Amino acid sequence: MSESGHQPTTASAAPGSATPDANDWTSQRGHVGAAADLSVISRRKRGGRRRRRVTAVAGAVAGLLTLTAVVLPSPYIIESPGPTFNTIGEFEGEPVISVSGAETYPTDGNLDLTTVYVSGAPTGWTTFLDVIRSWAAPADAVIPQELVYPSGTTSDQVAEQNAEAMTTSQSWAIAAALENLGTDYLQTLFVAGFTEESRAAGLLEPKDQLVTADGVEVTGLEGLKDRLNASGGEDVELGIVRGGERTSIDVPVYPGAAGEWLMGVYLDSDFEFPVDVSVTLDNVGGPSAGMMFALGIIDELTPGAMAGGRHIAGTGTIDPDGTVGEIGGIVQKVSGAADSGAEAFLAPEGNCAELAGRAPDGITVYSVATLEQARSAVEAVGSGGTPEVPTCG
Image 1 (cartoon, one colour):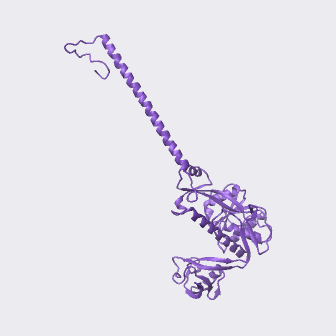
Image 2 (tube, helix red, strand yellow):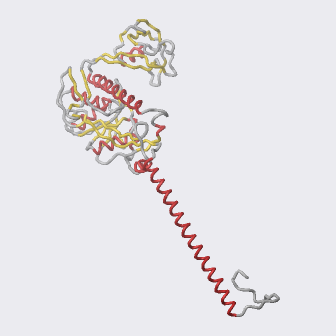
Image 3 (cartoon, one colour):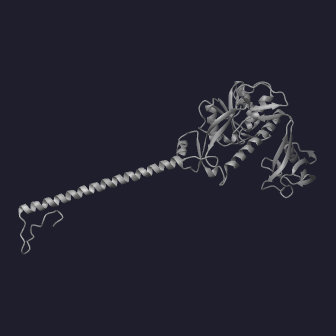
């Protein structure tokens, strides 16, 4: 039988057989056709089952991917705009900044510190769906976890570090504010470590307290810098307290990039202030509120409302000498400030480039490098003028 279902017409019957007549041929062809139709139907049924199986498998894969996106944690951290807090206002019915031991004056307006919500390990977790949503949000940032926290960092360690940074920023803000106002305070300096260029390593030790420099009492970092620069490159005799005992050591110095003289020593410090300043603010950590704390303290201690009733926000670390330092999350902080109604924002000079084309409408961002510049900018905005500092974004 050929593949077409017909018997070959040239074939002869074998002995004892007969060539099929027309009726037999038609009958056989009908059986063959019926068989062929059953085969097609059978294949269609099998094909339908395969399509249903493929559809079921594809649906299961899609469901698994959706479950993964919704449930499983991602290796990313998401930064988004957080709330703002008015440093010359109140938080939960209490003043954010309280000053005692000196005359204080009424304030008016807002000097907001700004924050960033941080989602992800080790303090929480984010899903891949969260990451996709944040990629589409202009004010959010998605960052690989290992770029923010070293491997093995725990949530307790993060909380402790943030609390310590906040406490330090408050102390440095008080020091910077008093320095700006010309008010004396005592700063005790301790050795914390050494730079690679330092020649003081091996002479000084961590936790050594610096008491004098070339016979002059060390009452703060600026005074120590003055004594180093006055050395002209000669060794500086440091009076120190080590293990409770007083001694003196000659420490070599070397020239810095700006022509100043350096010991190459990292310093920690304790302060004694002539005023008491307390900050009431829970669940906010890190050092980036330092500049705004300092401005709030200055406003409390000076006559007249520095902000003049205007809504001003900002961010930046602060050193006791008034240097404003860079921070993280500048885009999120400016966005949060704009959402809260701020019309002006003070940003560290070092963060200005990050805001190119990303500052929201309705808010002007000013670049500041020192507390004095920040104070002048606030006073200008508060009086209806234009600050004499560059703008960002």
